[in-house]
Length: 142
Ligand code: DGP
Image (cartoon, rainbow, N blue to C red; front, side, top):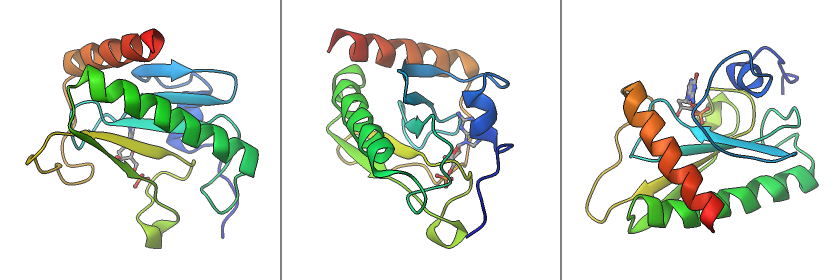
C-alpha cells in the first residue's frame, strides 16, 4: 500500500488550507459535510491523525472516529428527520476510496428515497451552510 500523502485534499482541509462546512470538531476528529452529498446532511468524519484508511490507522484513533460517526448519526436522525442512516467507509482504489485520508460517510436516509450516485452533483453553498448549521446545533444539543 502507498504511504500517506500529506497533500491529499482532506489533509489540506484539516490544516485549514481549504474551507469546509464543519459540523463537529474535537482534539482527535473533524466532521464536515460532503460537498457532493448522496442525501441531505451527508457528513464525513475524519481522524486528525494522518491515516490513509482502515489499513494503517491506530485502533485508538479508529475507535474515536467510529464513536464520532455514531454521535453525528444520532444528531442527523433528528436534524434531517431521517428514517435511517447509511454508513460507508472505503479502503484503497479497489475498495472504492477516492480521497486517501481515512473518512467515514454518515448518510441520513428517508424511507423509499434512493441515494444519489457517488460524487455526482455539487450542492449549492447556501444549502450546505444551512445543513451544517442545523447538524452542528443538533450535535451540540445532544
Ligand atoms: P471516497 O474516498 O470514495 O470515500 O469519496 C470521497 C468523498 O469526498 C466523495 O463523496 C466526495 C467528497 N469530496 C471530494 N472532494 C471534496 C472536498 O473538497 N470537500 C468535501 N467536503 N468533500 C469532498
